[in-house]
Image 1 (cartoon, one colour):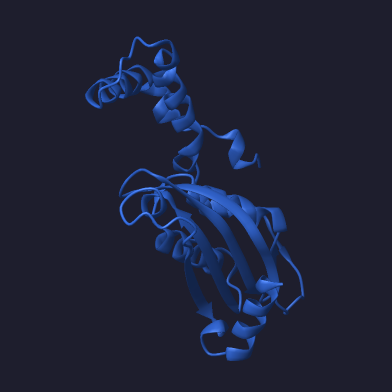
Image 2 (cartoon, helix red, strand yellow):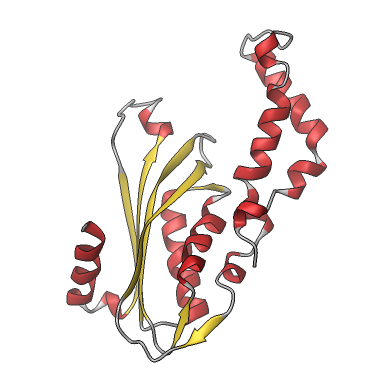
Length: 197
């Protein structure tokens, strides 16, 4: 299966002229001269950017995990520091950070790169960090049916850093815990310790 980076949001492409028109109108409404040299191609650039950053709408995140494999490994598997970029659904401002995924298989594993693709499929759409965290955990739980899943997502939100309260450098951390991680404090502690190193 191709990486999500190979996908584009087809709906954006199908509505290219309308989107470019509306971007041009927004530029006028904020007081810009849309005939200024630096802005002549901006509506087209924004539309091409939307095709890429909203590519997650073109794929079912469950399908991204692809083929799973039977494997008799029943110890913790972690993929950490998966960099993501998303757009806040409240302000359409970027937020970005790292996702850390851990699971304890119960006979089935996924290719490690598939976990990074899952993060991309979930984040390349209008989102909130809390939903990203829960969706990743729920999809892992549904598709792999592991003994347990734990997801931690760190994010820096420009809607909070560059506007509003203007607190640059502040980070939001969210977690989702499924299965055996809920009751097993030692497993949770092991996961958290390993993602810190």
